[in-house]
Image 1: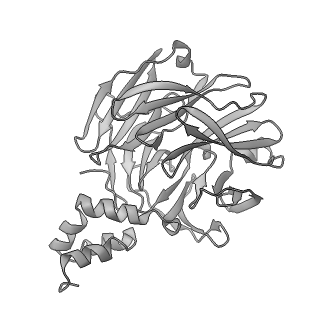
Image 2: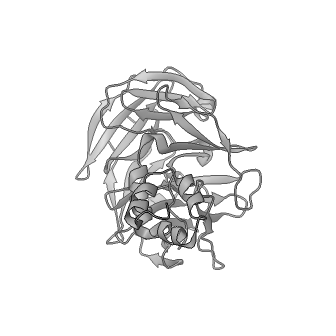
Length: 351
């Protein structure tokens, strides 16, 4: 390969798996320099957005494992055990926000925030001595995004002592800064639960739901360019049972899987158009599932199929008529943020 033009090497290596790129960096100084450029990382990532590069990461008290998805049967492939590269206690890691192969995670025994690429194993601690980068579960919210300059940033919304504060971390600058955050006083109540942030079309979106039947449910939007917040309505779903809204970015359009019900759960798919929700489809009721099992299963959707899965594999499949899903999307949160769907990339958590 040493005799090939640099343009040819670039084209070849932007099409190989991320782990091959990692090994290729050790070939020579020239390869390391080429494979570390922003152009290479951007092109390699754009070519990695295919279903075969999707992985599911699962964490329990004993192991952290990565599973490929077998798209012929839509089931988990053989797992690979992952050794967490940072100090932890009994895998006390919560996955807060995935983006482009990076995971923003928190360590529950120290409350530290980290950026971690599970494919390359590289990670970066985001906490600093003055308590920035410290995440409190059930009180805070985190969203990971990339700006137009390809700087990966973390938005951290903190709820402390009856006050909201918000901060943005820049990977480029390795620095936290405070930004204004205005919201309704009632949202300070611990009865309101924030979802992780979902990045779509230059905006981070969060669901904010009151934790009881008939409670208030809204969507909070953060424009990454103006750094302004605004509130939009939730889809008009029944509030006679549990309500959960899970946001996903499908081809740069925001969708929500709105789960409602009690003993039988129904899930409607909605799409956001100019701050208004349009119903895309209604899923047939999912057969009754005990609440304890419901908390331990993970759902995925792809073209024409809805998969209800446990950590061991599929529980059952529901056939649907969906067209826009060319890859796999999670449609309920993992219990305790113990899992993520991610794409294997070489995006670095630090500069």
